[in-house]
Length: 322
Image 1 (cartoon, rainbow, N blue to C red):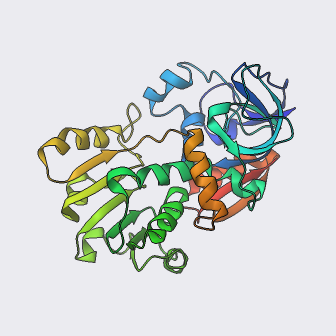
Image 2 (cartoon, rainbow, N blue to C red):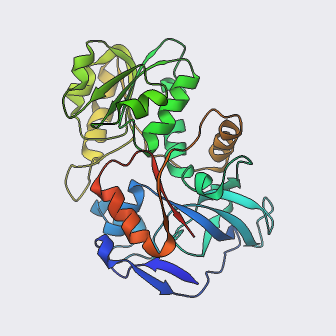
């Protein structure tokens, strides 16, 4: 089968199209014939091995699995001995290590039936970003009608889903995005827009009940200035902060401060689970959420798709059609 692989951590130019053996599923896994794969910031961490702390899971000196990719949608080819939830021929979506390939293995508890009204390309860009947005706006941060919600990184993958979820809860949403994207986020339901190139979140001159930071580069002190006294901050993105721990330093700072404040400062490392994928499936089939696809690339151009992501701030999601 053809796959996008790398033998050592590095840049997108190090990715190669290779012919490799088809993987064999373990007892709790499903072999998926991949029809489409999503490209999101998590793939950059897989590729670069940064922050270095991530290598504890990915492989210390080189990737344990040389094939890149995470999000996927496709058709069940075969199932492991202990898998009862799926059967060959079933259309599914979820995550599997090495999705930028014609076939990939995925744990059964990280898959769900594909939304009936979604194409494979649409379903492939839903798992990681969709689950992140949903988990961020659940629990203490669940929007209520009329609440003020600030979404930072509103035009990105997580942001576009979060906008739709917050609007469906009848919240009043302010979007933070880059130049030229105001109309785009307004179409998703934003009542107000802040262009980060010409303004700052303090320009809104209001306090927010919920802040979802999916961009990860503002200091806690600035975020707290616009957070209501009993408000909830969810940090779902963590860029910067150095090569060793990345944005985790800011998130750890939030955990340390939160017990002493009326505000809740929460960090999110999303976990893709079957039950949350089923929730997304239901939201998708009800028309509550839908992906915004910026560009589609063929498998052999996966490196170009990743470079487009690195170039900065696509509108919505990037997908690779296999």
